Figure 1: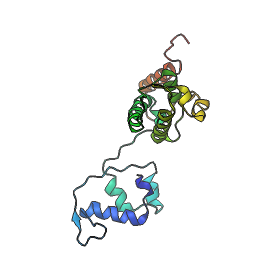
Figure 2: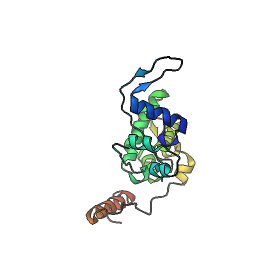
Figure 3: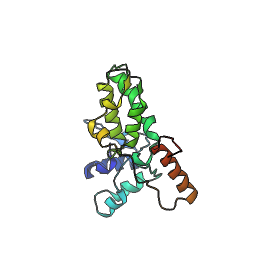
Length: 186
């Protein structure tokens, strides 16, 4: 689930699979050849873990062929409605609930929350809301109290160093409009 949390004994086994292209079945006698591509994810600073001896250097370089940096959910607010609707569809089907939408107040509360648990926290919140929803829509009241009570509109905007001024202005205007719910007169 999280490559940065793999214990050292498992790191050796994963490295062997990647280098030699073989696996050994439990109870099996002969290695089985495999042709796989591995997509690994972590929220840990693996380069730092390598320097401190917590992660194998050879495995790090084997996995770090094409690194993709994905910002935390709090920095990708536009993704929240899309992800929430995706999880809604998944958990409505799984729980056999006729929940088909998320109302605007609930979407606004989701968008205003800081998401310290990132996408997994959003997934769990939507699953809970689907289960608790009394009607065909998830309402603000179906969300956890700590989310709606702690849903404080962001007062800060995180922008990476080196971002061009035009992009900073665009992000600032976009975030201001989002917080004002599109009202340009405020």
